[in-house]
Length: 309
Image (cartoon, rainbow, N blue to C red):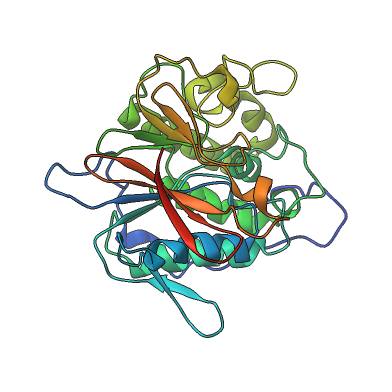
């Protein structure tokens, strides 16, 4: 069965993955105890590739950190080969106009880095790639993807290239977070189970019907709550940060726009690119070391600041 298009506009396509899917197992759910690697997290790039490049290259312009990426003369980013874990914490697409290039950057870094060093988390806009009947956004990149691209993305999820959560040194990473502790292994298994259901549904000619059932089948990841989907009972892809209780376990999330990294108790939201992209500076990443959580931010002057969050 072919998936139906959601718009009459020319379909968008997914860049062809350089990663050979059959050589990957599902990614590990937590940083190994013996890894001392700093964890760099960037979320909600939304196709604003230049801002993402600026944020990622800022890490290597500090006195405290080595580069996590290098940049060619044409702006292409590559894995720098240093001791890092890099988390793309959801919502890579749908607002800006360089969505394919943004996904190509993520894929390239996945391919160049050793296994487990680059993580790609599902956000609600990647959910729209999987479930276009649930999230009908025909004017966006995710809404215009062609059938083959949606099926390819399901393969990435099934292969473990796209996951829902990751346990760092002290913080747990997911796109929107949870008021309670996140069972990372269960969340990632839930995502793979949903992908398997959807792939089976395509074979059985029931794709439209099954995708509409996914949020209720797997609410801890895909659940929607309230009129906007962002209520306190929403899953890991949707809950608004304002519903995060101050006694929640330590988490790093994105999803909710902020001018600067924002803390509620032990939870920190690092979604800053969209809120700052019309200004000079403000884009940045979060870096978790074994004993601290820091923000690395590009200033309006082009310089870089490092501050505790």
